[in-house]
Structures are given as C-alpha cells and as structure tokens.
Length: 421
Image 1: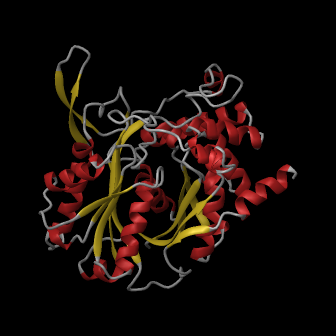
Image 2: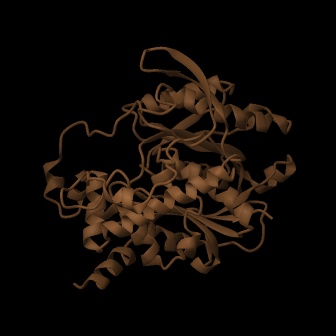
Image 3: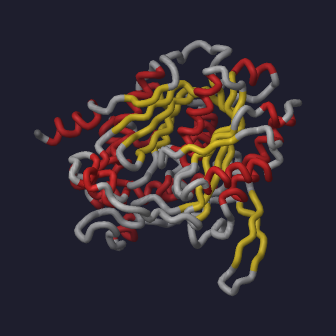
C-alpha cells in the first residue's frame, strides 16, 4: 500500500465512538449546552515550578471556589450544581477521585454536591465537559461543573504492573504499550516529518505564547492562586502564581536543533519539540441555555459537537486528523467555517501531521502557542484549551472554534464550539 493510501486508511477507518447530538448550529435552542466562565490556573513546570509542592486537591480548590462564587452571585445555592466532573490521569487507584472530592469540599461546596473523575488520557478535561453536557441533555440536572487537574510533579507516568502477552502479539494492541515518545517517532518516520519541520513548529509555539503573554491575552482566563513553595534549603514561602511558566522567549530553531533526541538515537523527538510535563487545573460551568438565561449567566459559547474516535495505537498522534472531521460533520459545518483551531501539541511530529493532513491554515492553529510552550498537564489540558479557545474566539469575533487532541493508546477527540454573540 502506498503512503497516500496508508494515511487515508487510518483516517477514513476511524469511526466516532462517542457523540453529543445531531448537527444543529444555526438557530439557538433553549436546550443548547452552553459554557459559562471557563477559567484555569497558570500552568507550572513539573518538579521545578511553582506548583511542585501543591497537591491536586489544593490546585483544584481555588478554581472550584471561584465557580461556586459565580453560582452564588447569581442568587443560586451551591447545591444547584448537579455534579462536578473532573478529568485526571495519573493518580493511582482511587486517589484522584478522593482528591477531587476533597477539593470540592475545601472549595465550599456542601456535602450534597457530588463529584466524579474521568480518565480518557489527554482528552480527560474535554471528556469531562462532554460528560456534563450529556448529563444535562439527558435531563439529569440543569447545571454542572466540568474540568481537569493534573500534578505531574507528584505523579509520574511510569507503567506499573505486568504486560499482557496476548496484547504483545496482537498487531494493533501491542502499540498500546509504546510510550508516547515512541509513538511520536513512529508518526515522524511513517509520514516523513523531518526534525527541522518539528523544530520550526516548536519555535513558533514559544514565540506565539511569549507574544500572547506579553500582550496580556491569558489574563482573563487565568485565576491567580497563592501556593506554598519549598526552596532548595527546605524553607517554605508563599507566592502568588498568575503566569504560565513553561514559555521560553527567544527559543529558535537553531537552539532546538542542538538538543539530543530522547526516545530514539536516530530519531527526531526531543525535549524541545515535545509538550512539557506540567501542573495545573481548569474548570467551567456547563448548563442548559434556558437555565443560564433564566438566572442571568453570561454565556461565552455553545458546545455544538463532540466526537471521540479510535486510530492505530502505534501512531496515536494522528488522532486529531480523524476526530476533527467527525466533529465538523456532527456540527454540520466545514473546516472553512472555523476561525480558530486549538490542537494539542503533544508532539510537534503529530501536530504538524494533523494540520497538513486536514489542510488547515497554520495561522489559525494555536495562535497563542500550545502545549510545547505552555505545558500539558494531562487531565487539565482539554478544559484549559477550551478556555483559551473561547477567549481567543471572543477577541477575533470567530463564530466557530475547535479543540482537539490525540489520546494515548490510539484515539483522538474534538469538540466544536460556537461563540455567543
């Protein structure tokens, strides 16, 4: 099979595994699922940044407290929140679920408000939004909170447990055991993504993020929070964190070209053209339009579609190239209608492939930088990207925007949002 047909087969064969609703984008409906007050913390550098000593419950607490205050400011009790759904990936066992419950209680939510966690790897924060949207559409409640949290400082990505030998001998399932860097190398090799192309994409991400930060574009979406940090001498001090820490102004292709590859000696994936390990949290109020209008909430956008698809695990990074078309079709629009694309930069290899495969204007992709510069706190990312997208859509006046990411073990997810005018 030649390369063109091989690429086509991966994308065409990917069928949606989860959907929100049939296409319906033009007229507003009382049953629209709308986004209100999407916020996030700054993103800290894992192990070395300002959140390295902050556990997940304390990292999530201020974001949830802010959303509780928004609900109460509209004359509603906190118990009007039907559920709190939070994406989190790395905590072992029931730790993540317990941390989210603790965060909600510390944030001032009464015991009666339930919570749960969701783990669809890197799309967990977006999946949380989709889950709350689905619950509202089903009539379970009128308003919920969806988001994500990850502290990669306190939870590593190591594999625990044995290996299923039946999976190892399976042509597709064996790819699930590849680490993410290996899948990046697989994408680069299979689709001829050069090191130079990847480094240029990475340098662009840092340049755009640095410019956005200097212009104050992240201010409206970031909630400054106070944390306690321990220095090298063991002294603890408090500091307020209000800016993303991973952005490296002045990053150039020449500097990136000097970095050694990490996952394969003759490969092309480096620490410079891959997403950063990070800590952060993000959340938003999600509600039915009729409920939002009745209580005077300021709607920022409408969730028009959500799709999760499966792709070959060994090249999981192509996920957005399959998920974005599925989400567009569901929303009843084309890529030409989209003003901003937020595509997670897990690796420059996969991100550049997806942009090229879909024929997207690169100027519309991650206009304020992406995970290579900002960081990628796994469970938080989908919710963080939603906040970043909607604020950029508002600045540009773009009617439609897309959030999309690849997912470890071979999937992709995407959502279409419509700006509230």
